[in-house]
Length: 326
Image 1 (cartoon, rainbow, N blue to C red):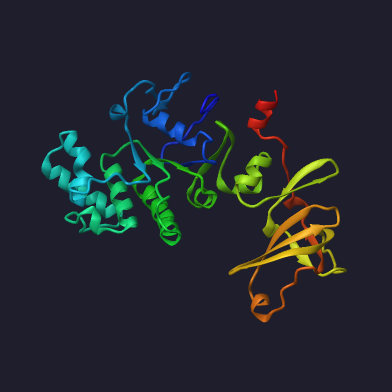
Image 2: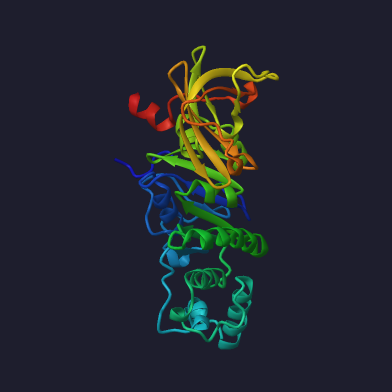
């Protein structure tokens, strides 16, 4: 079975492009083919209009940043950043100057003399990024680069990476299985599944208008329901929780019962069993209701409603399922 099949992508210069998908979906294999670590069995890979298929990694104008940083522990930060330039024969003065500039870009000025072991995880990731951009590649490939960081630092680095990418103007091709990370950082996202691409869209379009059930379920939480023979997805935040008998105000409404309540800080998550037998998840912002003890309780009969335009029609099967069934 092919790791990837029928991949057709065009990534714009200066774009922050993310390949998103579960483990084994083909995103890392695609990245490795762009880098030159693996060769495609058919088709071509072009970089700035030039076919680089079969060109070895060291002769491609790309660099890769990995999750494990791959820094040399015995070298200083400055030596790590300058290593690629030294191999390429760049003079010492130029190496120092460009290394300092790269560390400045990643918010680590004055760190050149430190050793990697003296740095935090986030700082080591910045050093790895500086080392990758110092050679001024046309494309920077990032394979789950934030996966080893704790949640708070990971979120901080998401913002930093997007800012740095905008400043240096290099095309970023980013691999992740984290949907929130992809939505936060990307100009466009390609959703992978079973070695194929299900959808390529900007984050807002991907979230609001998923192409099929797989995308709807993988990118964010999705409520899949069927009405009048049509399958639709509704996001939890688009559903209102109403008292029975409340005016609908143009909403499509249905009755049900609360079967689960989960307090999650900023929001409370409710699971509603509709009278049709289907279950819906919805979220409610905790402004005053949670602290006042006025949250609707498990077992309560409720009315739920959503605007018809917020129920996005989905095509049912994913691309991969259609291929498997044919």
